Amino acid sequence: MQRRIVSLCAGSALLAGSMLAAAGAAAVSAAPDVLAGPGPMPLARLASRVSYPTPPTTAQCERQLKLACYAPFQYQKAYNLGPLYRKGFDGKGETIVIVDPFGYQFIRSELATFDKAFGVPAPPSFRIITPAGPVPPYNPKQRPQMLGWAEETSLDVEYSHTMAPGANILLVETPVPETLGVHGFPQIVKAENYVISHHLGTVISQSQAATEQTFPNAQSILNLRSAYKNAAANGVSVVAATGDWGATSYKNNTDFFLHRAISWPASDPLVTAVGGTQMHLTGSGAHIQPDTVWNDTNLLGSPAASSGGRSVIFGRPAYQDGIANIVGPDRGVPDISMSAAVDGGALVYLDAKLGVGPAGFFVIGGTSEATPLFAGIVAIADQYAGHGLGLLNPALYKMYADHDPGIVDVTASTNTVTFTQDGSMHTVRGWDAVKGYDLASGLGTINAALFIPELAAAASVP
Image 1 (cartoon, rainbow, N blue to C red):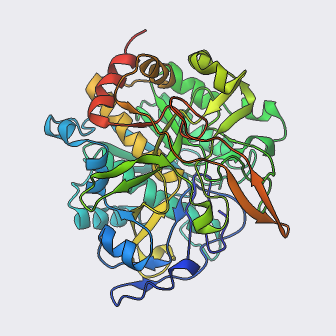
Image 2 (image 1 turned 180 degrees about the vertical axis):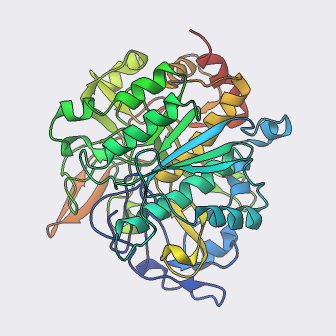
């Protein structure tokens, strides 16, 4: 996780401290300026060093932080989940599997506090397993990267649960942090294969990513695909964050590529790649305007936008043949997009033991937010269908070809990023959101009340 005044991870969390000096209300406490160690890690972006002891309203965040913040009920309304909840479709009987290196030792109590604050029912079951080996006790002073992954875990658990409050949660912790290249992925693959082979869940959410070009060679990625092949063969869906760096991605622990680049595993054809949007909502969760591609680069001073582009490892899968004019001969990402903006971030409860600062509610964005949100949607679709839907992408692109209204087109903003590196300004030209599929928002975002029945139907067709 890259940390300056922002905190970056594979799916990423941004710490936008300097712009928040005006947040001086008595009820608000300022957290330290840094989170943890070197290098890209998870993909959650902690948008603010400011913690609120009780959940603030959107108006309070806009007034004090100069950015919007959203609570669970706003996401539930904005994605039109109410009609499904009223019919009993809330993920009941399904299990969302969240895979995070290290996890977080105190996540159970965090989730309980989060649920109580927002009136969200506790999950029927919340289990934690470590199939790739024991995870050491939480000690961010001894292992600085633990802090970033703890933050990531809090976001993943709280917001997958927000979308599918009736689903079980299985947190799968691994003992080695994922950074760049191969490091950390063998343990993740081992853990995921365990989950799939023991039929522990039907949707796996991953908020980790490493730039394709940071692997030693293409074969080193191909050697890590066994869990995704296993998932596709066993009716398990895998969703992964595309990343938070717009059209570029990390080259090493500190620098970005100065050309287009995307990350794996989102680029894998057996994975559903989840990009990011910015939602524009009222305090009740109603849309003020349609969602746009997430791009907070100007706000945060470094690449902070929905990642997307063409793979240099994987060719175009058959399900993308209908958009060959856009992706060419390559696998294109994202497939779908959900809320990820820092200006419009999720209110996440972090306890004092995590080490970010005083216990309270922080604003977090990034495609690490988008991915668990979508995992919750998939869990409800599994419940609706009565079985795991497996690889989602053929169904998603069929829905797109059929003009199903549950997919909502995103037609504004861009994932082009401009940033300073080595004392010079650089622009990596990405893609603009346009009508139809694009490499900034994918197929678009969702209207859950329509999308879930459509996905269940499309994925059930051989």
